[in-house]
Image (cartoon, rainbow, N blue to C red; front, side):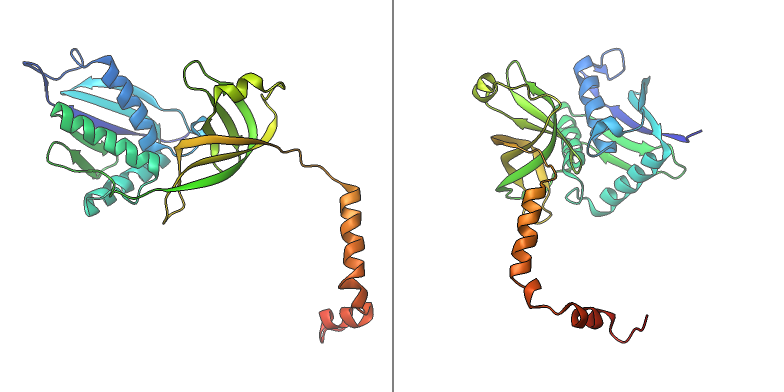
Length: 260
C-alpha cells in the first residue's frame, strides 16, 4: 500500500474582533487555499497526480493535505531550500505563483502562515507581513510557439479558449477568438492539430508562461506515411551523393580493420 504523508498550512490571525478559526474562515479563502496547495505540490497536467485528501482543523485555522509520501518528501526539500535562500526564483512558475499568492494573502489580511510536512524534523517556512516571498522581476520575452496534440475542449461563455492535450506539456489552454470558433465548420474535438500561438517565455530558463498563450492559427496536422514523397527523396539521393559512391569501397571504410 502506498505510503501517505501530509502538509500542514497553519494560519494565525484575526477577522474583525475575533481570533481566526474554522467557524469564521470564509469559504472563498478555503477555495483559494485548495488551489494554491495543488500548485505547490504538483506540476504539469493535474490529471495524472495522486489523490489529495483534505481536512480543516482548529488552531487557529489548520489546513491538512494528505497525499503520496514521495511528493511530501519533495515538498519538504523545497521549503528547506526556500528557507535557506529566502528566494523563490528557482521554483517552477506555478509553484512560485502559489507562494506569491499566499504571501499576498498574508500581507493583505495580516495573517501568519506556517507551512511544514508530517516528516520528522520537517523543514518549516513562515510567511507574514515581514516576509517578501516574490520572484525577482524578470522581463518575460514575447515569443511564438507551435503546439501539437489533441483538442479536448473548445469554447467558453465569457473567455473562449482551446484545450490542447500535448505529450510534453500536458494540457495547454490557449485563449482563442470567438470569431474563429464561430466560423470554423468542422468539429475540432478529439482531433489532432497543431496550434501556432504567442505568449511569454523566460529568457534564461526557456519556461513558457502558459497563462499568457493566445491563438494565432490552426495547423492541420495529420502525419501519415507518404510512399510517393519517400520515393522522390530516394531518387534525389541517388542522383546526388549516392551516385558518386562505390558500394564496396564505402562498406570497407565503414568496417575499418574489422574482418567478418
